[in-house]
Amino acid sequence: TPLLNKPIYALDLPGHGGSDWLTDYPFIQWLPVLRAFLDALEIEQCHLVGHSLGGSISLMYAGFDDRIASVVSIDAMGPWANSAEAWVESFWKSTSERLKQRPAAKTRPFKTLCDARKFALGYLTDEMASALVMGGAKEVDGGWVFTHDPILKNKSLLRCTEAHVQAAFKKIKCPVLTIRAEKGYPVPEEMIEPRLQSISKLTYCSVSGHHHVHLSEAEKVADLITTFWEDNATYFSHHVG
Image (cartoon, rainbow, N blue to C red; front, top):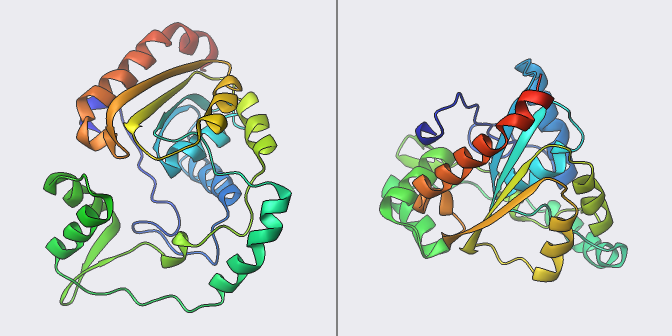
């Protein structure tokens, strides 16, 4: 955050960090959550910067709200899409998952939570793991617990179709910077290219690193974002009120 040298609001989405849990988390639900957040803070114009889920939400949201001056999406190219046929195949199983009781959070030492993150991802340094745990855990009697809702890991009851995603991307009027980690989240190339072509004001670049490249290569990512904003300063002066 200090590297960007701008006032920043960091949103804990429902089911994450210190925010409340919901009964379910279909992707499309994140868009009114972001809208309500901007409305509550009475934000008239802003730049959206998101990583992973946050980047996908930012991309899908930007075309609907003229308050968005630009989007930076870090290792994210929008939500996973399903065909109608795929939805029929997965819906009943997804429903069954939601009938199960949420598992209770296990209380463990802070270092154990960090080690769990490092083991799960395989590339985090101690510093990176600590930063992730601090944003997604809290201290309780006897140790620490993760605060995310366990059902976030379940398959969504309803996904957008690919046509929905590309139609939303075509509505984006503002400049977009997509930063892709070279060893990041595995997304099929046949899905990426049509989505990139749907964005009219796109800057695309890749950075060496894994999915959490904004942590491992923080200065490089911050430089790309700052340069992107500087390169689009004329656009902002004419289109941002």
